[in-house]
Each structure stands twice: as C-alpha cells, then as structure tokens.
Image (cartoon, rainbow, N blue to C red; front, side, top):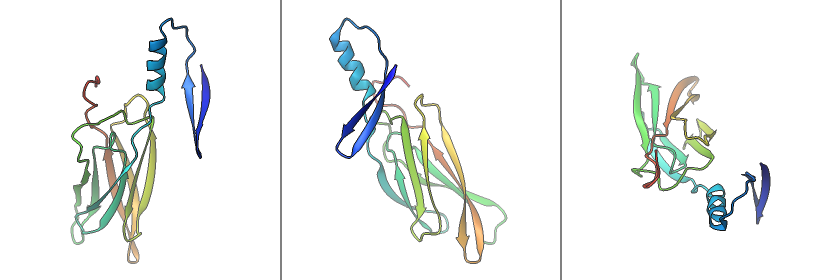
Length: 158
C-alpha cells in the first residue's frame, strides 16, 4: 500500500491506496470513490444548560448523537446532569469520515474546548471531557459526555 497526495486549491488530502490486481475497471472506480469520500462539513448549534449558560457547539452531523453536561448547582451537594444538545438528525446521512471534530464553547468565553477523534472502524461510543470553568474567584468542574450513537445511513450495515 502507499499514500497519494491530492491537492485541490489550498487543501491537500492524503489517501492510503492498496495495490491489487482487479480485472474489472468498474470495481476499481467504485473502490476509489469509496476510499476518497469526504465527510460532510460541521454544523453549528447553540444550547442553554441548567444554569442558563449559553453554549456554542460545532459538531459533525453524522457522528455526534448528543452532548450531556454535568455540573454542580449552587447550594446543592449533588451534581446535575442534563442533555445539553441532541442532534436533530434521527440517523446519519453519510459515513462520518475518518476524523471527526467537535467543539464546545461558552458564549461568555469562560470555557472552550475542541476535540478530534480518529475512529475509522466506528468503535468509539462516547468521549468524556472534564473542564474547569471560571466562576468569579472560584473555578467549577464541568463534565461533558459526547455520545456517538447515530444509526448508520439507510442501506448500510451497522
């Protein structure tokens, strides 16, 4: 196998190619199209948590199912976990791609993170991110659970 660099304008992509003999040229073209498919672009959304903080979310629409947020409520010993965001799509429309990126940031600028997950075999079910958010003189620990359980596109095996 070898890698091929494909340059399109300012972007370039490396594609891993397997060399094998195929007598049917249609099969070769079909395999090439499958290997070079590009994931759909990220979508933007906004959500409000249990304390009224406004969050901006950037997500891959064919991978992310929902984001849960867990935080300490003022005057309470327990942590509160709620669904911050749910993907409006009921199922994926296409394969999510080899690398998926998700970003979550508080609109007031007090908390911000970006993650990239390389999941070529579609085995990652959730990613847990624990952050600290400044709240006055104190900082608060906030836990995010990013779940990836969208059903695959119609006609594709799970």
